[in-house]
Image (cartoon, rainbow, N blue to C red):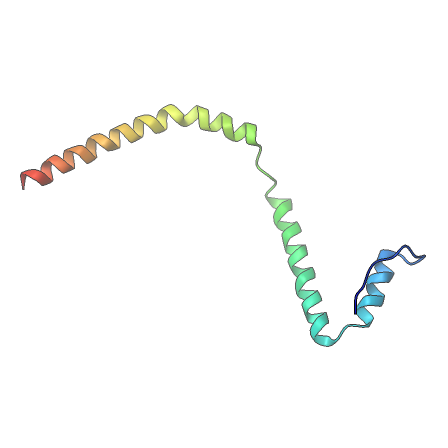
Length: 88
């Protein structure tokens, strides 16, 4: 059975109730699982808003030089360990 919310005098909630009245127990279980998922997704969005791209770019720029220096230091240690390994 196909359901399309139509422009009627019924509220959306009443239209949903009408549709739910026609569903089997298995279909109702699927509906409640989906509604639970939607509520969970809303809670997640509420506690973790979308990141601010400009703020992320600012942090990236702020730490870029430090990251480069750490990478270079790591390369020196890596090169030293290779030389040490070759001498064995």
